[in-house]
Length: 151
Image 1 (cartoon, rainbow, N blue to C red):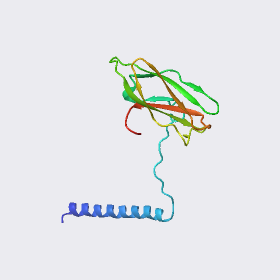
Image 2: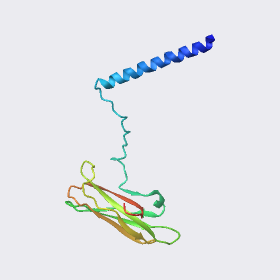
Image 3: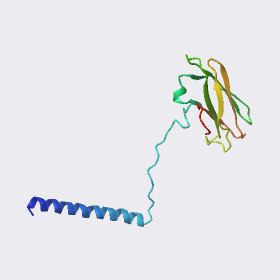
Image 4: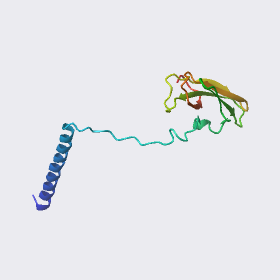
C-alpha cells in the first residue's frame, strides 16, 4: 500500500472509532434513565388571538361572502351568520358548514353540532345558524366548505 492509501484507511478507522465512542456516550445517557424528548412544536399565536371566527375553504372564498354574525343567549348560545353566494355564472353551489363551540379556556366542548348541508342560490341570503349543545360555551367558530360525503 502506498502512503496516501494507508493514511486514508487510517483516518477512516479513527473516524469510525470516534463514531462508536459518540454512540456509546449517547447510549449511556439513555441507559441512565435521562428522559429523551421529541422536538417541541412551534407555537402559533393565531390559534387563540386573531384567528377568524368564520373560515371559508379557499376554493369558495371568491364566491361566498358573510355579514356580521348575531350571537344570542346567555345560558345556551345561538349564533347566526348571514351568507350570500356571489358568482357571475348564476348557478347554485352545494356547501356544508359546521359550528364549533369552545369553553372559557378555548377548548372545544365535548358535544358539538355536526356538518349541515345546504344549497346556496346566487344572490340569495341564507342564515347559517348553530346552537351550542352545552351551557358552558363561551366562544364559537364557523367553518364553511364545499359539500362532500359524510365527514
